[in-house]
Amino acid sequence: MKQDSTARIVTGLRAWISVAPPGSQLPSSRALVAEYAASPVTVQKALRRLAEAGLVESRPGVGTFVRAQRPARPADYGWQTAALGTAQPRVSRLSSTQRSVAPDAISLHSGYPASDLLPERAVRAAVTRAARSSAAITRSPVTGMPELQDWFAHELAAAVPAGVAPPTARDVLITSGSQSGLSSIFRAAVGTGRPLVIESPTYWGAMLAAEQAGVTLVPVPSGPHGPDPEEVQRALEHSGARAFYAQPTFANPTGGQWPKATSDAILEIVRRRGAFLIEDDWAHDLAIDADPRPIAAQDDDGHVIYLRSLTKSVSPALRVAAVIVRGPARERILTDRAAESMYVSGLLQAAALDVVTQPSWRTHLKGLRGQLRSRRDLLLDCVREHAPAAHIASTPRGGINLWARLPDGTDTGLVVREAEARGLIIAAGDEWFPTEPSGPFIRLNYSSEDPRRFDDAARILGDVLARTQR
Image (tube, rainbow, N blue to C red; front, side, top):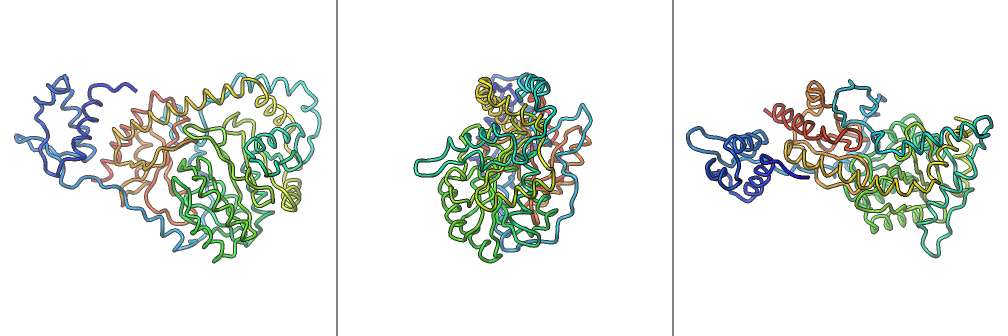
């Protein structure tokens, strides 16, 4: 991204400030005008941004100085998640990501990509063809359309190493979106009143499904590189849980991806304990800087219950997902699916299958990776320039979200309300924690809004944070 003169000065001075002792005097405005070949107005604008970010302070008639107390890296209290255990039951409520907002608002709260990131023409053509086929007037098998089952099985089988038996179409159960699949998995494979180990933070919809299934959540702290396997093992041992729900690939909300060593260790732990790993691969098609590595591809003895959705990459209107599961657990989940919804619309399944089997599908995914990278990097740059108090610890390697830590003591509810009053809609991080949040966080979706509005969004956020910290 090409920087304007103000941004270039801000970037240069940030680097200078980062190594300068507190109280150091910045170069004079005249010196900065000469160094950056900029106008005095531009230099003053850059200094004002640095002051708003709390990095410098101006002393009239004397000069501009590095603040004695600069914003520090936020403390990490995530370790307390496991030590404290489960808090009082959460109260079910509509997620902030599902809110309807004014058409002119800058929306960074959504849980879905914008329509221009979807294969819109392919979807429209597929729906038209499906409507003319027998799928429009016939009942689908309760397990799903055989051709779609086969496609999901082959997708996972492509990552299976030598010596591991690949999944077959019979192992695949088609569901109406991943949320429906999670509900059935929690009811059938965990059970009412039984414990489920879960990452913290994690997907709010998984917590909601668990709550409605009467499952008791046992949180373990997780971050950009996933949970500590030893924490997972302790949680399984102390709670007696026989299942662990996790998002090893581009987790929502953090965007983190587990290193292979973590994946291998946790797979070994669930094997030793005779437990399940419920692997939610919701962002499989949303890779940016790393390829997905499904843990289920390493498992052929039924310890991993694998969930993959097409909702985010094909269309939110085609709510189609798959659960890949082996052994008796498959029959329990299948029975629950039949009792809840009988079967998934064959029309939606046919349209989804049509899209993902077109030659253009792989081309679309390749282009999507570049578009997501561009949007992610642009929003990162804008937040770091205009709202540095929103600390983003790591750059997500996939997915659609930035996870930002706010300064200790920040009232995230107030920040969200003040931002909305200024036309910026963001999501408070509280709803992604199964227990008390380990700090004040917000989640920013870089895929849902026109990237040309990111600069304005970051300016609003920076101003709101500056005002609420006073």
